Image (cartoon, rainbow, N blue to C red; front, side, top):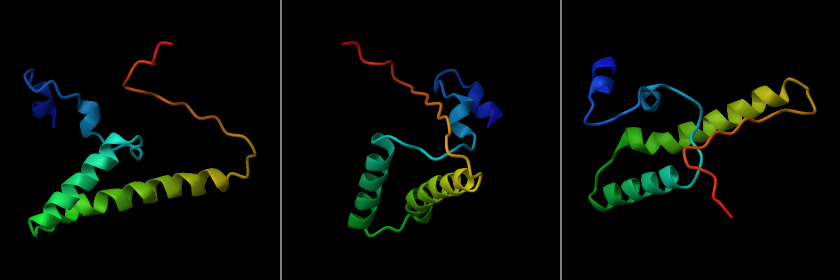
Length: 88
């Protein structure tokens, strides 16, 4: 991974290759479903791709369980975005 991230042509951030929390938004789930649909049309079974949505859901549910088990009534959420906020 370290060598891969040194490649200047790809311009890949090492952050994309590190394990992290579940993904959100609309693009990745939509694109993943499109890939799975195309694989089905081609009579292919991509087990890794097929497991991603389930794994993502499990991560969100586990985070909820951990937060709920603290017994706290209030929590803070820090949100980060890769797009600038829209200007009005």
